[in-house]
Image 1: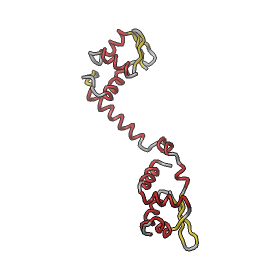
Image 2: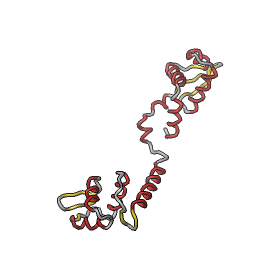
Image 3: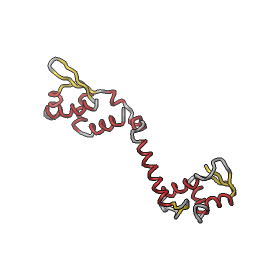
Image 4: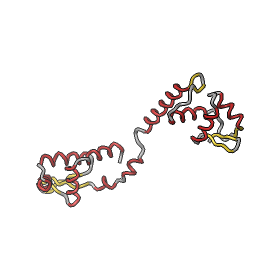
Length: 182
């Protein structure tokens, strides 16, 4: 089931009358007048709700003698909600673009001429700045403390705080006086 179909189905199911109709149709197939009598609603109201349920493929209809019979479409309700949530979304690319735009905005706000103006107070913004600094480090290379201090000092004079924050954020590893980019 596609994400848009799932949204339409969930919206449709957020109505007590429609749920009552589905509960009745689980027991047996029925026609409009019988559903109206059973649920105490008018045939017009039942028809309105059945049309909504048909639009989301929750019920199907077929002709039997003089009546249009309605039955529940069980395949729709067999879908696992977790599978629907895990399914690739149309919005994932848009989310990535928004995240990248936010990242660029933070970097332009906190960096000037390649140096960090100030350490952000918000953790998410600080993480973005730390990742930007860590981008200059080579992956797999082991740095001595003096060497890492000099590299970080190019970005900000408080290299101790930045080094400590990079370790606590899991961006950089440390053992004794040696450091490496994770």
